[in-house]
Image (tube, rainbow, N blue to C red):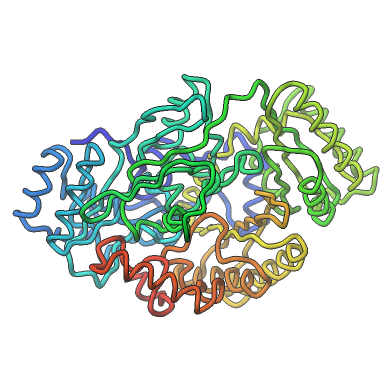
Length: 564
């Protein structure tokens, strides 16, 4: 069988890797305070795979033989485990359903083509057989972009791009790298670093997501302030469609009508299968560091981030957590000892002597990259702005810790599920002028939703991905369900998403639309915008071959349809 590696079927990451709280003395008290949960309580263990009732594959023997002739016997499978792994992404809705064995529809067959020619053969075979193709990268999607629709009766193919994982070439004179779409973050970065380059794109899902997936969902990385979002980084594309390949050449800019490149960005597999991306790469910087700062309040932190975005400073990371997320961050830290412990205690005493409420203080991380001189100059510029807004620098130690654990947060969600809890995220972007009101409205909407379903809940946020006109706000919420977990989740999630729209934000900054956010799309881009987008899908894919039903639905997706 294929040697492509996948995440565990019931949670995030690889088997054997999990979040542990034993070395984090503040975490158990935090859970009790925030959610009424105790880590020592009996856990809700994930089901064994044998407990699942996996639908039988609907793929015919003749069609399987046809796909096997394309990719080889070891790269085509209808086995239950492979089809379950390829059924969902990793949203909380996905994990609740798969743990409950709720598998209304799975892919009928999983295929791993070796190259673009193999992808073309699969696409042409699918069109001829009136089958459905759902492209699959790392499986990290959290908005329902991967699952086959329950009512779909046609043969569903999960086209896994895991074997297309090479950095093909680097144009060192232009800083352009051709990368196969199935290359996951760590692999492509390692290949680039061997030659002294970096893509600079590090989303939370970096460890288990692919460059093709980043393009398909318009991803943003933690260092987007310097390198840009994937929409800025991706310069050229190759997309397999029926009968041929759509090619977007990598040029700095072009005036060639409505941008087809932009049409592919964020298309979530609905316009074809992305097989190759030409990206802008940069030389590995001489120096890279992340400094930590503290602000007395969220208002101070927001104002500082806005001024930094307008200044001559060019940081790679701009992030500030609200007071609630700051409390959470300290709760997930390992116990400090020796001098470090004394410094931490001394800082708390110092801040209280200045009149700070340490439950409201906000932790910020600012990243710097470049030459020694460039980093030093930027640190001075930012330092003055931080001081102006009442903040103080607390050095590189917390920043180094953030750098080490920045990809580990999703494991905490599995930990909470094992305790019977639920946690998820929602992110948006809005102009600077609207961010304070949007934040207040979302917090109020979420807390009202917690009250409505009768649970003790927790919501926290951070600002990241700063732009000249605004920024991204990223919310994390958690609660202990008191009834049907998905019904209650719908109440909270819907309240947050509607608050985004009502407060001048977008439905999603970088996670995409899928099924999860589709009900709010028309409110976001207008009925006219949805009509233009639907026209594009209808024209480009008249046979509804490519990932049907995602992004646009004929009506809001009812919770029951997603739970069946």
